[in-house]
Image 1 (cartoon, rainbow, N blue to C red):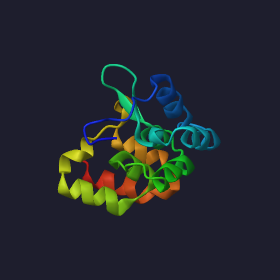
Image 2 (image 1 turned 180 degrees about the horizontal axis):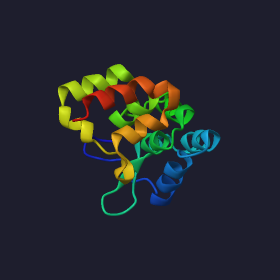
Image 3 (image 1 turned 90 degrees about the vertical axis):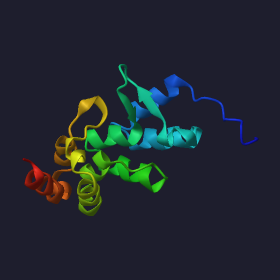
Image 4 (image 1 turned 180 degrees about the vertical axis):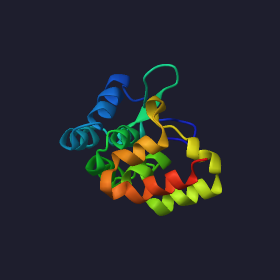
Length: 135
């Protein structure tokens, strides 16, 4: 493939099914990635520009195992995923560099704090940090 050529576009239905699986089923996620590794960072548009990738789906549903699996396989880490996973240093670094990121929203307009709350006890320090930064 030359530098100007792009790989074929992923099937939209496959992308949507993968993103849905990332909300709930690690084994299904593994099967999808074995079938099509390019799904790892693919995003689905639910409409109106509401884009969601698998990691974001796992993040707002508190699916820690799925999120970690995706990251271990090269998924791009986002602020909302780091918040759910309790990655305090990552969250702090982003917020310190860009305070407006406190108002970040993930897929479906879900606020950053909600992602942190979905992380449960493992994200408690992130919740406390976000609360300390609220005006």
